[in-house]
Image 1 (cartoon, rainbow, N blue to C red):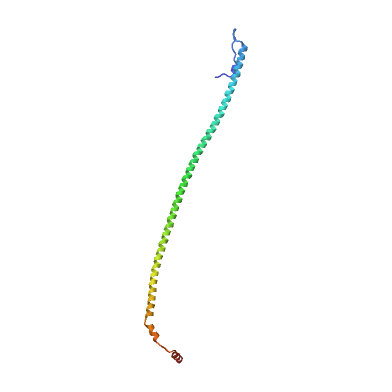
Image 2 (image 1 turned 60 degrees about the vertical axis):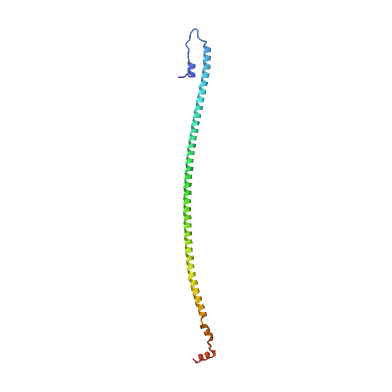
Length: 168
């Protein structure tokens, strides 16, 4: 067990006939007590500083661990957000492709329908043209007929017609 300043102060030496000068020994012991007390105080202060430093070190270590964990959590969150964004982008692309396919298919369907309507109109116009041509040819045949010439040769006296109508 280490000596305390009180142990040094209370130390009694046995007396001998030819011993050391008691005042010198006491003075030296007083100086040792003062130095020893000073060393103990310095040691206590250093222990307190060390304890405080260790507490601060522990606090900063906790902060470092917390920051490290926070960084890891932030990285994981960023990865999750990135993954979700990529999934959403793929979903949007798939939806856009479906819409594009639907629009293209609708356009093709309309184009086919218009083409069929055009073909139907062509058929109807051929039929109409053929019928119209036949009608005009029939009318031309009627005009070319000799019956028109005979009508011109036929003479009726209008006065006779008026008389016949009056008789009736």
